[in-house]
Image (cartoon, chains in turn green, purple):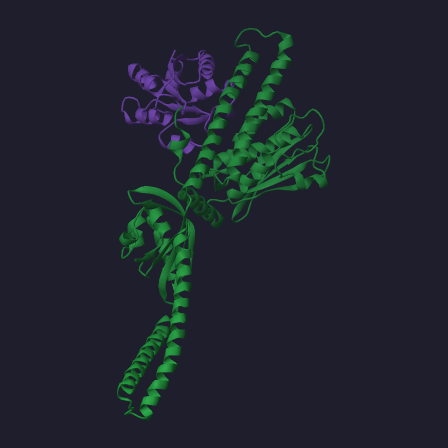
Length: 445
Length: 125
């Protein structure tokens, strides 16, 4: 299209120049000799010259307008804070704006004629580049994602990138336009926030562990006999410090969930083992309250999940049931379908009112369940449900009525199932795309 | 009585765990990773209880790695005892015997957990 316009403009300019020249030459001959030896032809060229002069003027105007417009575009592109490059269909750079020069450290001169991937690529896994190339070159669709590149001098930067193919009328790639925004600072901030949270919770837990452990040892008489009058307040200190530890752990969990930074370690394991282990730990509380804790309805099924997280969910559900049940007990059972195993925790406790059902899974929700129950953080069910969902299952309240107990169920993918594969891929992708931050979190004081 | 090496930089926690384990074991306490490695080389203990965040430029992972790459020390069970709850996989991959989050266990369970990782013929020697 541009080539067509250029040709027309060139022809008109040529024609105009020719006409104007003829007008000048024949005009000069007429003035010098007072004689027009070409007659009509002279008149014709003279008219042509006048018309072409007008045309030429308009053409110049139009070209100037054209130039002003493209200059506007150029100025916009050049002063944009985002890095922009244009490459040919093979990824060879044709243009880069000043932001691209600043971000990558390469001058326009160094960029042009070189493959973009050669200059600042190579830092990420080969598969990432292969996927990116497939998307823009084969599928011919825009690629968008957070990438890591290398600035000149091997300095790493994080960027939010969008690469779009520009196609001709036949659907062939004419060139690629790449736009990147430097998000290194945002990333650093995110990492710092994460680290602060980790360190803060670690630092909170250390003195809390000391209080909890020492009080527990004092109560056990390990520092000498404890007078009868001190038994009750020491027990209160113990339960208060327990609560604080739980709260710190729960808050850390919630902020990790919100930030999408929960770490999962997947493996295949027997769900029965996880249930029996959790039940054994909680059987002490059940005995104290004279409640039965039944797991005979649990089948041996190999699941694919994070065993610690599954135990955390079990601990939360069975723990809740123990808290809200005064007579009878809790029974845990499983049912198996092709993809998932469903674990049910059924109790004979206080149950849940209809109007309270909606509040159960909110953050900081605690239902009014009468006096004398140990306070929780109100985060347990929220965390448990998020964990189940992230691991490819779900958690819900199956059945509950006031005074008639309640049944909670959650699902876990069976090893080898399609759902197990989906979740494995998903979690490996997520952890794969996040750089290892171990060195940040375990630095010494 | 068998010896257990406790690597813990927090004075209060170190005293607490030391006292709790002293009924069953002779407990040697160190504050830093370098001290811990020296103590192990001087007199190999039956088990090492190891914190992760340690002062002095050497963290628990560094100590664990050192212990596991030497033939004389690699068979000593290393029990990670920390308040970091995200490092379990890495510690287990490096050869830790178990990984305990301090705030998630009852102190009364600690001696039994430690006994579990010390071979029976040496536990009561």
